[in-house]
Amino acid sequence: MSSIAANTWTRNILDRLDINPKVKCRAQKAGYVSAIRILGASQSELQHKLELSEFHIKNLTAAVASYALPKQETAWEMATQIEAKTHLTTGCPCLDVFLSGGVAVGGVTEVSGQSGSGKTQFGLQLALYAQLPRSLGGIAKGVAYICTESQFPVVRLQQMIGHMKLKYPQGPKSYTDNIFVHHVPDMDCLVDCVRYQLPALVSRHNVGLVVVDSVAAAFRVEEDSGEMNRSIPLQAMGYRLHHLAASYGLVVVTLNQVTAAMGTVSLYGIRGDVTPALGLSWANLITTRLMMTRTASYRPAIHGKMQLMHHGPHSSGKNVMEFNSAGSSRKLLAAEYNVSGGVSDISVMISDNKFHIRDKIYDSGAGGDPGCILGIV
Image (cartoon, rainbow, N blue to C red):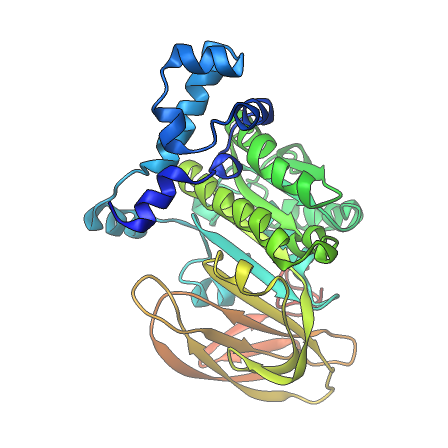
């Protein structure tokens, strides 16, 4: 047995298990903290020492066995899962093309950016499009929206719902009935929500999209406790989100803040003085990162260039898309996408509230979709 495998069996694993806190506390107090100690004991011994019911003991041993002996998958099974993945439309044809169909089912997609760059707008738009039938790019499922920063933007949501009903009359009768909002004040509540409350909600109400707005707010208040203390629950939450996405076929989107960087940095082709919050501990847990920045407005038409460096299961790299909208009152956004494909350059021209990509024209003016990330947000 290798040293890594031996460590898995002999170290304290209770904090890594998704079990009832009471069971965890009893096992810790009785000294049953390692996989070899728990699985090496009989059920009657564990019931006697931990003073727990047969139901709780079976849950404990099952959780330990799953952790120590994870399910094995062949390369064929993994490739089949990748090919079978579906996508949720973003509501914008341009973004869907860049993301190879939209936001992928499975994995964790992050949307990071400065305040006012449109992150919450993007989350709300996904919450509405997720309820559309598959023929319209949706997944015909409910939405779990977890808020950590401020009140849920009900007014803006109602405005977008009014537009959705006009544009998609075949959509659900009530969009709000399928959006389940939960407010969490701190890191511990967020981790507990993802571990215990979210799985029950997903299975009970046919939820297909999970939005966390935002993941950084809950963990930033714990900065005084140290990076190491914060990284453990952060990783636990990330692993749990991945597990839920894979088990239930969820679209998981987390909104993230940015933090100041020393000097000017070049991140995935975008130069600036900010970088996504939570560092490498969180960056290593996400599968796709969308970056949004807010820049100055321009009155004349803007000519720019997009460099698409796609990243996915069959390639590596980043996809950077930068675009501007004409008019002094518009927000100019830059987004970075992490999707599958090759590397290419696309010329872009923005003029009269439209952006032109090669021979295609996508409307982003006032008459377009107010929920579109490329429009006026």
